[in-house]
Structure formats: C-alpha cells, structure tokens
Image (tube, rainbow, N blue to C red; front, side, top):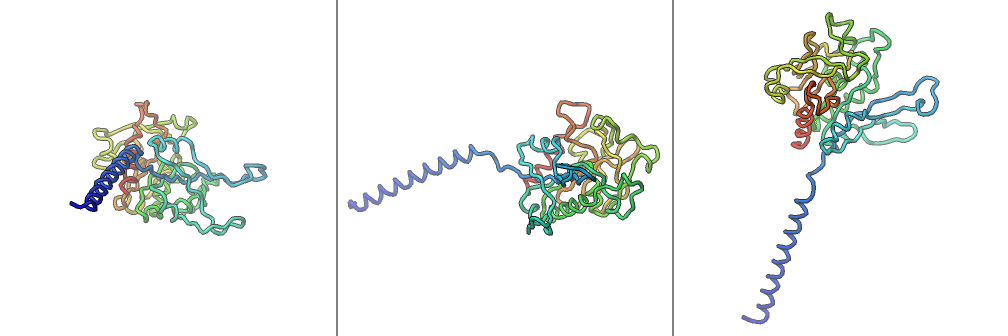
Length: 290
C-alpha cells in the first residue's frame, strides 16, 4: 500500500469520525429543543369611541380578555391577537389581509364579548341595546372563513359560537329571556358564577371527549342563543331543561367547534363544572396535525 493510499484512508477515517461527531451533537441538540410551538390567533374585542369621551376612551381599542388568553397559554402555546384589517386606513395603509393571518397562524379562537348584530343575520334589533357590534361581526366572519379555507382549526367561545353559526347562515334569538318561553336565567349579575346543567348529545364529538358523562354543569353568561342552526352544523350539547343550544360542531370541515359557555372560566380544581382541558387539548391537537 502506497503512502498516498495511507493518507487517503486516514483522511476518510477522520472525515467519518468528524461526521459521526457532528451527527451526535445535532442529535443531542434536537433532543434538547422543545417541540415546535403553536401560534394561535385570537380575534379581538373592540372598544368603540364613546360620545364626548376624552383620552383613551375617545379611541378605538382592540384587546383580549385575559382568562381566555391564559387558558390557551397554559399549554405553552403562543397567543397572538389578530387585529382588524383596514386596507383603506387614512393614516397607515396596509396590504395585509385576513388570509395572511390564516396562513401564518396554526388556529383561531373566537372569544366572547358584545352581542352579534341582528343585521348580520337579516333581522332588525328588537331593542336598541341589542344592536350589537356589526363591525366586529364582519371582521370575525371573514376570519372564520379564511381559517377554514386554509385548513386551520377554529374554536368559538360564547359569542364565538354565535358568530360561527351566523357565518354558516344561521340565526339567533336576540334575547333568551323574552323569546324562549320557560328559559333558564342564562345571564345574571353573578357573571361566571352563574351555572346550569347541559346534556351532551350521545355519539357526538363532545361525548367522545367526556366518555360516560351524559350531563354536566357549565357557566352561563349570555342573553343571545342559536335559533336556526347554520349549514353543516350539528348540536353537541343543550341546556337543561330549556333546550338552549350550548355546543356545536361542523360535520364537514376539518375542525370547527364551539361552546356557548366559557371553558376558560372552569378552573382545573373546580370539580363542580365540566373540565375544560379536553376541549383545549382537542383543539390544539387539531392545530398540531395541520
């Protein structure tokens, strides 16, 4: 064997040894890194300027309710508020669209808040105080369709359930207390401490999340509710005993689910209310699979 051949073999051995070392280091680094962090968008609540107000209350504000954001973040998920998109802004124009957020994020949560405007589902407000927030309706319905078209999961909470229903052509009772005979008190001054029982529809996705649970208690903080169910949606839970729809799911889309109650207010140590973890984990798993 020549000296040149010896040098070639030595180089090959050295190269293989270095390559093995690099692969080993890469493996250790990969094992030490956390899995890819999900990025979940939350629709904004809107605060509109008040008449004759000064300072901050004279401005349009967009914000998140802390409990909902922290509930999602409890699974080490990044939460990002999705602001309204105004391509015609007088001060600062932008070419961004709702679809850009749908492409960049892994899922969408529609949080609670103001009434859905009856104008959005083809009715006139029966009372002025039930006029709702038409601007927010349009913004959230666009988000719903863009995230669904992008194949990303959508989770609705309270108003979020109602806006999903309207986005698929459904309608709402403007006021449960006056439009549904014998209805429970679905909203009181106790706010999240107001609760009632729901029955879970057998064989539904919710029933699979809570095996062996036919009835459970949830909080109740709403005076609107679903009247006509939207296209492709099915009922997964109803209030007992008045039958008000409390959970829905779309049967054809990849993941569209919503609850009329606020699962983020169901503390993990409060065994009197339906555990919220299965709902959150199912939604996040759908985001990961996407």
